[in-house]
Image (cartoon, rainbow, N blue to C red; front, top):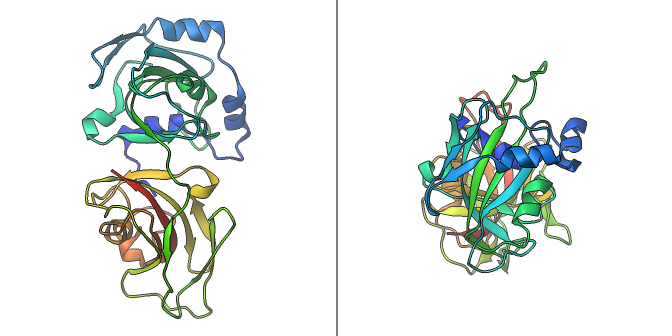
Length: 310
């Protein structure tokens, strides 16, 4: 769902290794490995300058190279202890290990990112560094570069300074009053854990405009434009094929109403209440039309659980 810009490339290094998906053997190998003493010493030599609350400056011998992901605590926090399963709000700056150029900074963007402590998709080195820390901690994290392949270009090692701004425990699914949907819409069935599946009626027509059907009406605050929202979601094409789901990973956080996601999401989620579950049918004009995305010509169906907004 996220429209990734080059400035946010470092985010992908936080999650599930540096390449491939869950079936990528090399990514799995990276995720299970342990940094060597030499890697730890290389990261220890990186100097971090600047007070908490702003993007620090990272100084290091170039090119920076390591064999495995590695992390260390730069500044210990003084807030509440971090707990497994909490959603952490973080700021980070990421730079190239080759020449120190910036890959992106959430301080520059003005919007923190989030991650779930203990999420299996996060590289273990980072999880281990954060475990036992407190809100306010600053952690230095580095991931190795990679050689060019038939499908991707070579990329340098990345160094990130990550500051934990806040931590809270979120629900994993929508909570509120059930709403009876209009007739003729795709039918949503929920598993015991809340994960949705759908059945699309035969001959279901492509809608001319965005369809937003609340399935659960939450009792939390109203979502406002520009807020950071955290959701669970699944998405299907009109033939019933699922193309994405946060339930297979972890809840997804984005800025809403600001073009960070497809127009259909921005229009549907702003003005709804936290705790709500929405069925969306999004015509291609409010999805990926005009882009190079493989779904550019598709009408899309989503079930979105709004877990948090801040």
